[in-house]
Amino acid sequence: MRLFVAALLGCAAYGCSPSSAVAPKPFGLTCTAPNGAIVRLNLDLARNLYQKEGFPILPIEAVTPKRVVLTHQATPALAVSAVLERGTLTYVATSEDPIKHERTETRYACVSGPMFDVGGTD
Image 1 (cartoon, rainbow, N blue to C red):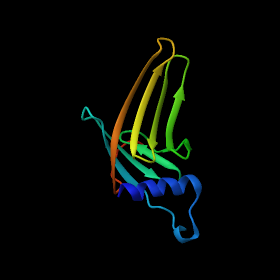
Image 2 (cartoon, rainbow, N blue to C red; image 1 turned 120 degrees about the vertical axis):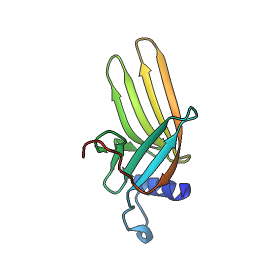
Image 3 (cartoon, helix red, strand yellow; image 1 turned 90 degrees about the vertical axis):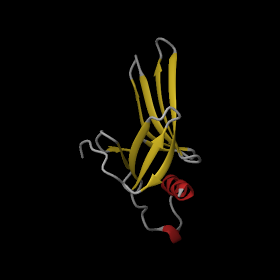
């Protein structure tokens, strides 16, 4: 299933061949950090949307050859980002305090499956 999801992510980045013209169906990800923390996401690559559990549906910010950037927000005091690494199906949440020069990163191994109810606002 991981290979299938990686192929879908690649299709979203580069376009699909005529043999795969059918739009990919939305799917869910359950991502687990080494400390046991869990993040649940729904991805709809055909519509370029994602939803993290407890949050509204948002547009995917960018797709590069190596990752899907779900969000990247920065203020003078804090920068946060959430990306999905396409090759390893790893969700990476990062925060950085440019004033204190502190950076935290949590990596979550993801397993794909059907979409699920993640709450939040539509």
